[in-house]
Length: 148
Image (cartoon, rainbow, N blue to C red):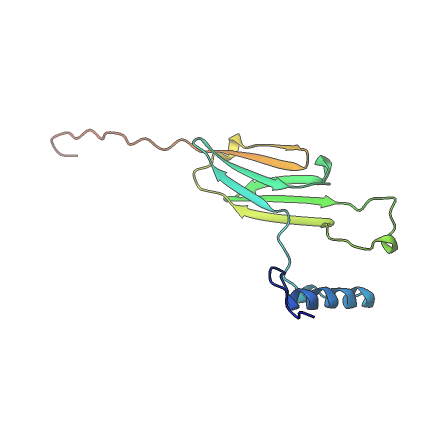
């Protein structure tokens, strides 16, 4: 009987993690400090020629539960994601999707025209357009002869 099979991934830490998760679920307490929390929502930021594009996965978040603010070079996303109303807590057997209130702040580049920002939420993906501000054009300074 082979003890180790080539090509099979064996992860004793993964097994330990699943067992600890199972034990902690049975205690019905939360131990947030055991595992680092993932930032929610996950974000991507792209730089295009004339704008920065920020996308965030917000599946299950309704537009009325979403708030975007900007100030001092910080873009803040706030929102809520609710549990299904018809499923009581004791019926959950696995619960991996984030729920509840959340807030995420990201710094934006200085070269963004904050007045021209626009955002849309479609199919659970928030897309925020951050247009680049026009660069200040260098100007010629006229030099005159004489005293000032």
